[in-house]
Length: 147
Image (cartoon, rainbow, N blue to C red; front, side):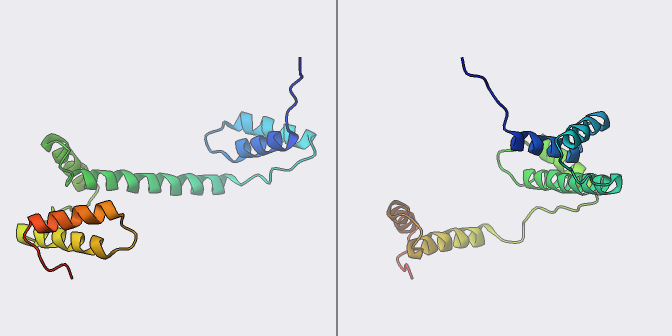
């Protein structure tokens, strides 16, 4: 039977991580600091003001990502109308005016799609199969000029 030994460097790293983790209780942080001290290590603890600033920045970044998700939902064809309505309400409450992109017509949309397929044919990073698909799509759409 082999005896398991802990890697001291990994233990120290875990204790330091606990000290700096905003989700760890104050009591657990104190215990981690004591163990580090007993091991002759220092955690370079951050001040409570730094912790609050870090938490505030993280919360703000999270909120921005949530709002981006709601904004994306308003134009996602796989999202129900009820969910889109809710997303618009959340965005309005956050002071974000979201207008659906109606700035171009269906004709312009088709023009952009065809341009994308033309670009794929000339892109060296596109596979041969994808280029062939693009050629077929363009031919089916009546496009003969591939330049």
